[in-house]
Image (cartoon, rainbow over all chains, first blue to last red; front, side, top):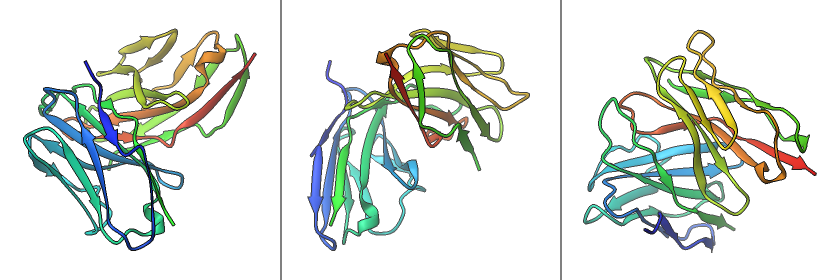
Length: 117
Length: 112
């Protein structure tokens, strides 16, 4: 079956504009994660969904960042009023039901490279 | 909080050399430990994992042993190949945390 897909693969935007990044998880995976990979900060966790709810959004860097997930499948990460420091590769991952105290392998998408000019 | 510290790169080796990439961690409780690999132009892939102390994860000739006493999970391979050139990330998953905490990554280049 298909893996995790993300779109667009590349996005160039101007400072101050809003952007939406999309993630399609592997079919049947109930857990979905967003991470950010940047030169200065490495790979950072942003937010985690279990179904349509987000029990952990502790990694979102500011209130300009938001994410939603509908139908327990597709997720959208929205960055409002983009800044140059938002430039990074945004990675999405999905896994089977995430249960406390156990680990289910996270499968990563290819990422969206965001460049803010 | 949980954290992972990885050997800084880049690392350049000749084919058939022995590889070690050091990884140490700080965590409460008993995390699961992982090595992820990112080949050029591709997404992150799980390379190997260990879920409890003294477990050894292995895959594609790579090995890493979960050492609780030294809080380490060093990646080793006895004879590297050009195709092993990639960025390697050490990571942990705190029990119930449902998120991965990554090290800063080590870029490995193998020359023929």
